[in-house]
Length: 219
Image 1 (cartoon, helix red, strand yellow):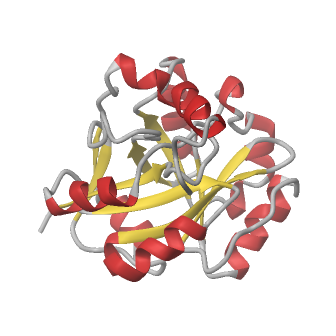
Image 2 (image 1 turned 60 degrees about the horizontal axis):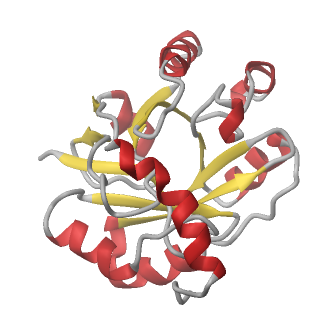
């Protein structure tokens, strides 16, 4: 079997996210993606609610604002507060039995963790995002890939989608539905589907912020 998995998406609970529960449902039902991690900014509520409906097809995640930049926790049981150091945050993720996933590394304009921070916490990193469908600085993907290979880390391609349009552009193909115990090994044998999202979707975070401001989205 081949399962398309996206480990980085943002629902309407994120301040700049816009993917609704119905849209996640349609994406799964139509087979656009087979497993989706919901990784809202500093929040797990939406993901915890949706996993009750879709079970193993949804991974509870969170994109956490550490003091040095953003880090994702996967297979979480509860929200991890922001503003801890990257190392402290990684430890908190692992304490829940979660997986430490590094989104858009080196992209400082998107709060990606810098090289010195990554090297300092390298033993606590589980997965490196080596391709991001919204990557504005395309040379950073090569740096991420080289870093992952140097330190023998699992790799993933992901969408970082903030709206449903363009979802399914970038993902990783694995051989079975993952758990927190199997995901890293599955990714080691996985296949990266690397395709940039349509350019217009880069505007989604800004548009979503306006919608949230005027209560167009109901959380």
